[in-house]
Length: 65
Length: 470
Image (cartoon, rainbow over all chains, first blue to last red; front, side, top):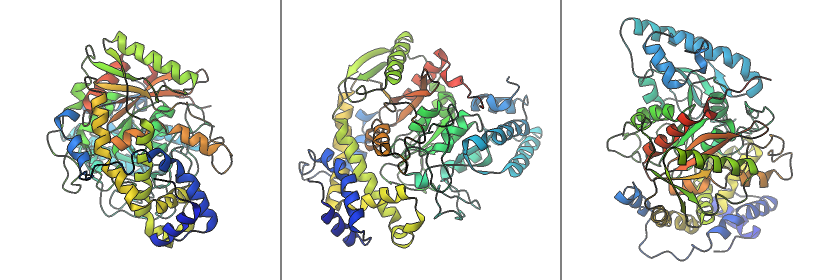
């Protein structure tokens, strides 16, 4: 998982339906970069059959309480 | 009994009203008198509804005289963060966009407090759309810290922190998506409870991030938070994410000793790069727990930076999705900082967002394994006490973004894990600024956190310190 460039940010924002100018795209790329870097070790490593609902399963399990 | 009812705790004033030692009118007048004196200095209130509050107080007194006690908080005046819908009331959410929005429903949390007999003093300031950690608000002005007026309150529940600290309300609802209850509690010297995701219904509370949002109280004591939690928690047909099952008597938990409980101290991250006053407060708090009979153990937690990064991805995307229509139609009506934060979420691909959501259960399981046998983990809420308003104003200070990032590093991981966390006043710096510590618990085990917090408050007086007007 690599942080998006300003050019990629601009394209993604356009697709999202909220276009941004070049300056804003550069600012966004800089701002969200650390989150991408921080999550890089996890991204692309998750098991196939893992669903978001696993969180609730773990949260409500006996072990959680 | 204090000669100034507003200085009493929530629990004490509720009992005093029930016993007819203090009338609801006296309690309300006492709060209103303090609001008149403090509001020009703090900017804590969004709306002050003095006339309506006194009318409601008189009605509460009349009902009580006839033996009609509505609930355990009969006649207690409160004000809450201006994001909890109350039918017929303007709910600004700290924004220009919702500056004249009149709610048509009442939030479940608020309704449950009303059903317990509380009356409304008005509404409290907040960061715009609860999306800011400092207390700055470009539309309605910054809220000021009652212990040092040129310092921030923390956010986003800025008005709640300031108003509870200055004894303008006996307690206040806040919300915590990335630290928005715990930071104002830490910076303002009050007690704040971030609840487990699912513990309190979010129906009728302004959304920011459906996966991370939590409702919770800021109050003067852990006991007060326990009373409020007991009243608000539980299933709600209006919010299927609110868990069912019996609600514990949290207030009863606060009477118990902590002898024999095990409290974990992280070996890294939460103890790194701390301001000297915060480091000293952490050591002193641990020593107090030890004196109260708790066992103190070291805990090695999983990488908290990964949790923080995942939290940022989830929050950014969900917030941008909630606001997308206004980002298209009314972008000019957002404050510059909030607009920038919302735009960040536009650039995160769906696959990355979903990976962050899919990993959440794995991360929680890893955390629970790391704290096996530990009843709670102690950590600072923030590495620093409250910075000044000027040095944390992104528009005016070149270092402000770095200051803000540092403020929130210890709170975001807990939101990602959905865990409860109680912030308790634990010290004052040499310059008189409050310092709070957070107790991080297991899912749905708020009772143990409140028990530890109450034991600490029986042994210390940091929560009793009242700020003075300059």
